[in-house]
Length: 216
Image (cartoon, rainbow, N blue to C red; front, side, top):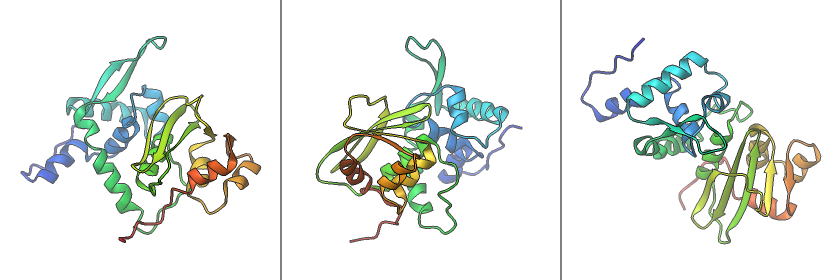
């Protein structure tokens, strides 16, 4: 069924006409850090039916928020990527994270996608004086990240040469990043794997908290 829209001149209503359908903004979230093929988008949204994802991709492309792009060799396939207008929704997603963490009922044990974790970390970070780099491998997705005075940033990449390399599922790493147990407990239980100095890794993770930020 085609989206009928709100038929209002309000700018907020216009924005919701473009991204307000169920799953639309989460599809955009999954593409925020780089292009993905259909299957990888679907893996980050396990609750969406394939036909609904197909429909959302069609609608978002028609609205100028995503585009199809050929991946570089050796992967000869088409992927979906955000257009500049799609990338401009990043502050909306960040604001929803900041608002959502202050509302009751959040259950961090529920599924979190690799990209969802990286985006949340960029919001729930306490900037640090000394810069540090780390790689995160979460199933089929890997990210190269940097933590420093400007906050936290992530981009797709294997990070094979980075001094700290974390590996685990999205939920396992989310528990290590945000949970109360120290990293060594997650390592001992085998939920998370680490290459690099455990003390430096713990300092890296200590920069993140789900506690709502308060004004100084």
